[in-house]
Amino acid sequence: MTEVIFLGCGSAGKTLVSRQLMYRIRLQAHHGPAEAKSSGSDTSVASGSFINATTTPTTGMQFESIQFQGHGVVLREVGYDMARLWHKYYKKADVLLFVVDAANRAQLAQASVELYRILEHPSAKSKPLILLFNKIDQSLCMDIETVRQFIHVAELRKVHKVCRQSLCSQVNGHSHNFDFSRLTVWLYLWVSGTGI
Image 1: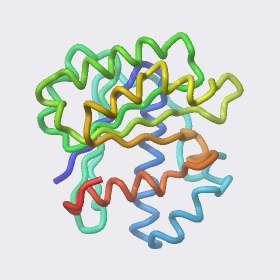
Image 2: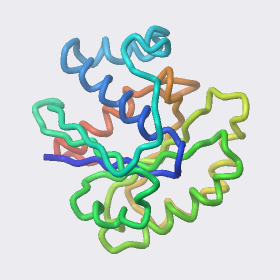
Image 3: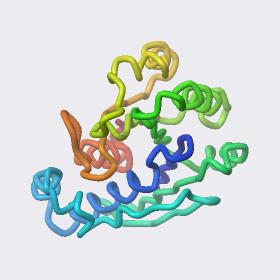
Image 4: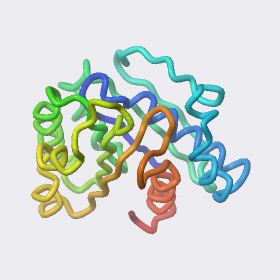
């Protein structure tokens, strides 16, 4: 069983990102990778016909188990109200997925502090890390290079060997050069033992 833990500051979009990923995995299971990838630009996803876009701040923790390419996967989201207890989930996690709200300038410094606090913990240092810069479709989204500088991505990649980063839109699941099929590929490589 592979466990992916979703972390990030409040209202960064963790819940919708996890729903998007769950939807893509289910779509791929039923229709295959090609259709899952092509539906990444399907506007019906954004309209909410497949994904419930209504959320409230996650209190505590929520998780869902699913079969992905013959492997059991647990997607676990831990709310920001439990940030002081996040460390209790690192040991069981196989992949850390940290969501950054790229449209919230006031939260970027806080996100950077939280991310480095996570990676300083002995149980998290060796875990693969996926950074998702979320909400890039919003008008207040900052220049992505500026966001990367706030998060100190260049320095992070020097000390954290397994680090992947991408852009995303939590609502429509794709934007610019990112769609959730890439995330499902990374997840598949990990659960299959290939690494990401």
